[in-house]
Length: 328
Image (tube, rainbow, N blue to C red; front, top):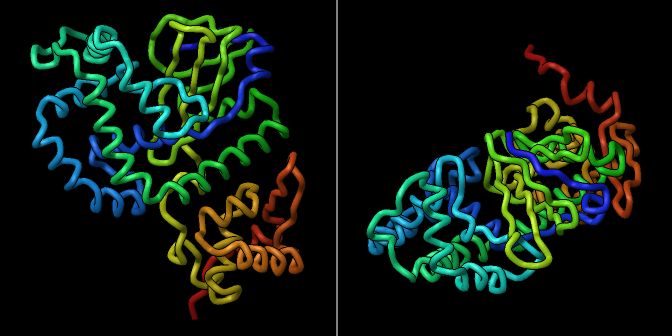
């Protein structure tokens, strides 16, 4: 397993940030794989995949670069600079400005072998940045505001979990292969890589929507050293599409109305109003009215977590959601 040695000061100074480039790279990985995890991703893939594949068919060098950079166990480092909370344009500029020599070296690591002759060239960082810009412009930016709300909602959920269970609980649920080992050790993946001492570095946690596993990235060749753990949104926030009435039991929808019942179903784990708006795509006023009715009926309760108010189901709400449908 791969793990990082991290002291208390570094962990205390770590923070969650959003990264348009990380979201774009996650979408690039999804386009490359061509396999969706849920119906929302499938619709997105169906709409975006033809243009992506056509672009690579017209540019075989870049197509080879993508295949080489997305290794089976390791991503070429220059493709994923550690996020800092910048705009997409600022982030992708760091890909474009990467050293061609380092880019080729990173590709030999992701390939776990020699570089193909077709990639022995100096324009690889530019090609990578151009492709990421295409994915951002065509596939991510039109939907960025909704994606951003989902990512922000995930951060709210994570920080609430942090306040309730501490760093160990928050880190153990970030993504598969990540957990706090004790003795200042953070396991970041399941691969057999040497441990890295990152005490004193900047550490960022970065949510993305369209991925199952995420990745790690770092910039240890300049001061200050930066490390990032990119993780997928979890639970109700994992999907990039809105939650529709099809996920609501028919009998519950008939009793409460599909929209209100959908809010109750989603509250199997505490969520804020912002999270519910992001996931359901209902308006803030509508979600607020649903929550008031559910509160008054004793089906949900609320508690404060930092600056957020989280709603969760009561035992009565649990009974209602999980009650078997009757047929007469």
